[in-house]
Image (cartoon, rainbow, N blue to C red; front, side):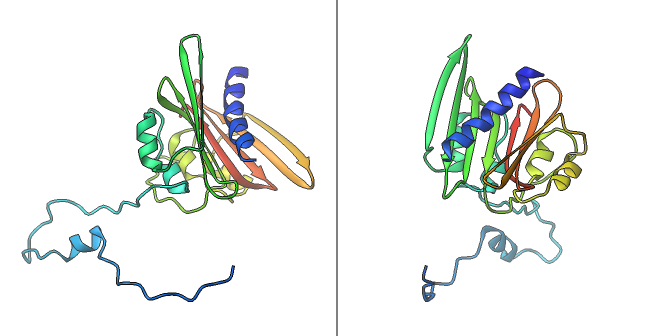
Length: 214
């Protein structure tokens, strides 16, 4: 258990260490082109014809935001994650121990926004986000428990009780510190093997989430 706590805590620590108006008159813009979904719906079909495929709403990822983060999965390669995020990383460090290569890559946005990914031998094993904005549109199949579906259902701004309800099992560990009037609470839920979800709360609300080996 100590090994699992050290690995998950180290990933979160890397993310924390690296993060350290006059309104304009709106200009007229051309009418936007119809989306792929709209265009597909407007195609002429026979009155009673059945569609060949079911239309699926897909929200594009790209950039340092909650949608991009929610689509990263364990097992993805460095190239797959880079293509998904679509912007150059801010930092990259690689170490090798006992024949295992660990690479930590961070993408930083504005303010404290960041995505940090740990690759083990070239494939994702852990992901961490901090202060990401946006409401990701992803399909959650089985929420509850220490798994990826539960993890991607967590949102910045959720309360401790909301996260506890979403995960549905008691936490493994909890630590709190207070500095300059700000209370930071880190709670970890452990699953099978090395799998874990770690959530950081600032003054009682989610500001960072991290998963390992889900």
